[in-house]
Image 1 (tube, rainbow, N blue to C red):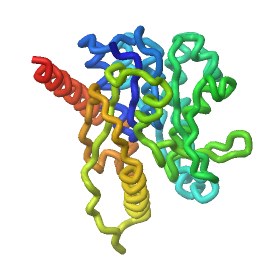
Image 2: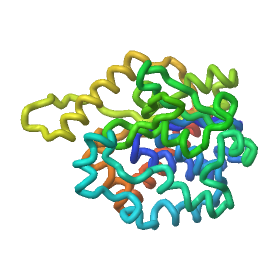
Image 3: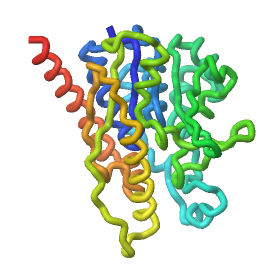
Image 4: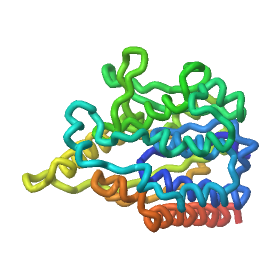
Length: 295
């Protein structure tokens, strides 16, 4: 029985994870009522929360796929000029923009704390962020940070440099947890001391970045490649040997998290549909593979 879920970070890949979760739940591979913990970094944390709100999938499809997100998430020319001081390109709040309506429809305050949210659904969430001054990864959950607002925790785990403003909390600066651990399966194994078969993991895999940084790149392309190379090196150095059998691997094109296409993947309805459908396909391939192993 699946009792724990681990969801990879990766911006628009959250829509792929959503497709995976939807299909596996519909196929009764797991039941949300059996879930004890959800571990998520960055966008993985957001979709973990969406899952734990326990909406029906038709409602979520309408909300995620059909809502005019271009009216919520838009970049104005002045945002580029303000970037020097604001430390983040997005002037809007991604977490509030994405989740407020879902919480209001459940009569939940957007100021709900981690402790209060745990009492609401009895699911223990773990969100991962990085303390910028020490490069220490921090596990945010209702036991370690009971009074921390849920939305603030999500802002901390999704504060990817350049895109989102860093979060200052109790005189410390926090950025996206994916900078150090984009797939926190080791934390789940260490914390829960459970059987590996009880964990469902959704993991992104990417091709090796062979792009050479050159003089013709614009600022966004340059930053994309520098950060990409740093993240690849960190992930490879911290590569985990924590094999879990119930792991859905989603092969992602490097361009999916490209700075210049990141927002388009979220606000264009056809691109959202493509990503969700790809997640469904990944889940179906996983189910077929597990059936072959058991036959």
